[in-house]
Amino acid sequence: MAIAKTRFRPRLVGGPEGDPALFLDIEGARRALLLDCGDLSPLPPDCLQRVSHCLVSHAHLDHFYGFDRLLRVNIARVRTIRVAGPEGILEHVGGKLAGYHWNLYEELGLEFVVTEVRADRFRVQTFRVRDRFRPAGEPIEEPARDELLRDEDVTVRWAILDHGIPCLAFSVVEPDFLNVDERSLAELGLAPGAWLRRVKDAVAAGEDERSSIETPAGPRPLGELARELLRKTPGAKICYATDTAYTPATRDAIASLAAGADLLFCEHYYLDEDRELAARNCHLTARQAGELARAAGAKDLVPFHHSPKYSGDYGRLVEEGRRAFRGELEEPAR
Image (cartoon, rainbow, N blue to C red; front, top):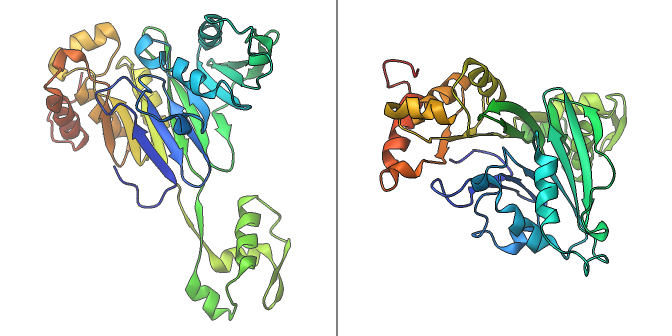
């Protein structure tokens, strides 16, 4: 599950057999993303206090009951936690928060900004502890965007899957790494120093190529320095997909979202011999998951979320998914 160069540190909180929750720590950023809120009990408070965004696939119990722990360990902190989920997430978060009395908490500073993702629009609502977590007015509506989040650490995209209800899959991509070509630096006769950080920061910020950068040999245009000295290494891409029927629409959605992913975390809920049961319950078989990962060109497949039907025998699910991912099974999944 290793990626050659990345600041991402992904961890299935309860392991592949636990209730779904992926903790994505970002090295050096003092923040983390949380994908689903299943069993969060293995995470110490300091980890949950770094969560800036909580991305919820859907609000079935096994994916959402851990929200209360996220709330508990952050309640005394002055901070904003952003939550995103499918249609209905505003009511689900609001319902969680309405389940408690808040009469002694009005001096605290925690707030949740919740985005409900629909195919055509986002609906955003804020819940503040100082208001006893009552909604701050009506939801604000915005046109839907492919990018749910873009900042200096990550870009998050989404797709809607079909679990009998809307269910979200997510991709999380880090920015490209900018590395200095030391040979080119020597050939130009330039000494390394803090000015190289200025070049990197200017390129990352999208500054005008004509901008002047002070070097040990005098001012040079940013564009020239970037072309001569900097080499890009693609950042890592992690995709998370779970709880979906195997349909042409969801296959296309996952193939697009997970294209070229370094890691695809994908449910392996049933064996393919139980594909009729999988279809009825809107889940994937291990074989279907493997073939989806292969079709997307993912570099590695990480299985998780297995039906308790196979308790004690989860290795069969993992093996079936792995063989499908490697193209070792003759007939395609149905």
